Image (tube, rainbow over all chains, first blue to last red; front, side, top):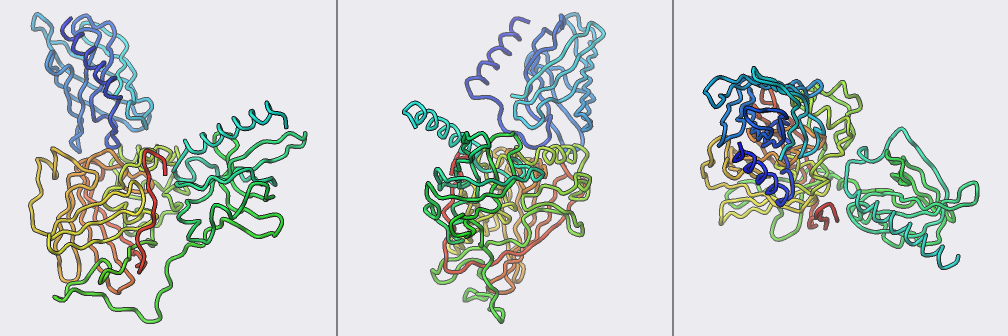
Length: 133
Length: 372
């Protein structure tokens, strides 16, 4: 977990040095999102969320390279820009951890827009906040 | 005026100048509110003759005797210059009456619709730029010796295409009221503009609600992409390089970029819809002649820009088929089919015409980091 925190912190610093989010005028969820799912004792407080849009489905990965939790079902409702992401990872014992992230996009027009909401799993719950990098 | 007061008003003017310059280029509705008409009399304090917008600064006396400096925003130096106006049309000390619409944010800024010189009652800084007159009888399409139409200038004479009959993109068959920048008269008409996917419609409506204030073409001088260049205000120049089998399309506004249409039959590259490893603002364009029509297929666009006036979204799956024909020397017919399965439910088409501006080069207009 310390390794993940280090990776996320380094990524954050690098993004800061490079000058913030790159432009993304297409699908609002596409891109790399960095932030916190607070209180997550299984996979740590920090999260790196990679999302893509293939024209019909939102795909992605949580913490690629470390936890590698694939995004399962994901949806975006443009009324309120409400999102829901379901993903299934594993804890250290190999037991399934089923995540549900629910929130909405804030500052939609900005490259460094945010997703704000909550996460829950069979092992805990907490607040969720990531910003597009 | 004592020295401190003079310094103070100098700083105030400087701050206003900076504020006006920082606002830079934008859709008019993004900054000014049509529902806030305003009229005042005042004395010109300075004229800032610069692109993207000329600013006239006017001292306006309040009822209590105090004076406030207002920034009156006007069209570009290009349009005003073509209309016969210059930096010294008005001078500091001239009295004027200004009609316009006020800034949305409540600052002392006005979009100037009518400026009257008080002493002469002459209207100044109005835009009289119109498309060249059509000749009595249509002039024939210029052709190369092998009979292929020429899309650019002939024999070294200057010339470019401008004055599009439409500056907004709407799917064929739909009539939707909007202004020249693409701001809808009624937001409820949004679904009729194009066959949107739900997220794309939502994003389009969001951009419309913000009056296009986030357009990266204005905010960051991002290139207009392929089709928007044919709806840009200062035209497009075709440079046909037959030796190298390509056409250069020079943009007369924005960041004054250029696009290359390859005519050598090269394949599209990349993994998805074109040049996937290096998606481009203008995509990768491959053209061929079908009779008298140049057909250009373009893929490999990035998602860093708005591909239309009015803020229609696109994805990197966007591909365009453009058809160019020149039925007369003075007319360029442009037809486009938009295919973006990432943002739209089906391919859709539109088209318009541009007028030939012969014997002239593209107007000098540069957008660089939102400065002229």
